Image (cartoon, rainbow, N blue to C red; front, side, top):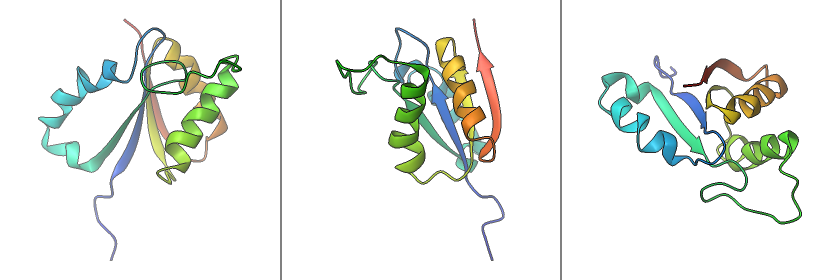
Length: 114
């Protein structure tokens, strides 16, 4: 029998001039206090040129390149068959492109701006 409460994968995408720490230092500590957190596997990605991600000089940092980076560094690396997307600011554009490209794997998308 399978796990009655399978882990849900959640990809967090930050905005421009930020990094994955936008999520890991603010939202993640609060989520870790919740008992339901065990149901989720959270991934905070650094988009290209930000945080600890590569900063290739020959890259134009296009929407397509950002999506391909998330596919390579997260979706393929961790074999994510289904996932939720939570995105902020410019990350919303990347999140929408990722969601459109992976519509059969996408479970939900949450776009945040403040």
